[in-house]
Image 1 (cartoon, rainbow, N blue to C red):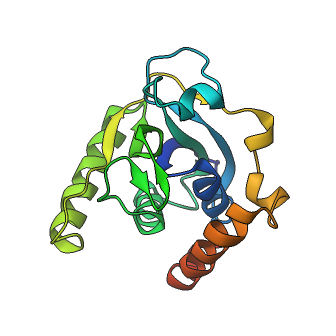
Image 2 (cartoon, helix red, strand yellow):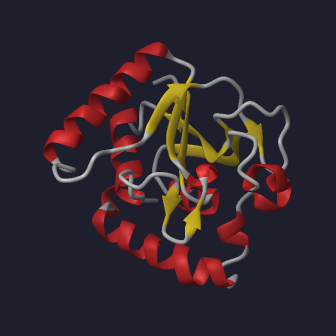
Length: 179
């Protein structure tokens, strides 16, 4: 069977978390932390965290659709963060931490919107999902020191206090999808 390489872009708080989760998922071939959804060309981390670029911290998820579906990736994404908080995940506050999904394929954008409608009715009944869904304009890879951050820095305080507990919880809930 020929490999069906696809890309989707998820933002849900700090990109170190999203990257750490999706690097462990079967069918995901590569995860790159970066910036998208804004207007500033070639933004730096310092510019993005200032909140003045319009960009969110996102991860480019490269995956094989013969192994994992977009629907499954969406399920993992919506369990991995709180899509009902505006511009915030935990103590990470600002537009750069908003919940966002980007794709350059119209049919995927429609599939994502339909999925969100379904989980809004069936799962998030009491709270409104505020995830932004938009067409990808441009993705900018983050600086090298942000790539593979969790796997290279597990003892970093943010990793120990935030990512490791979330990873443990996510693995319990979705163990069938993890490597």
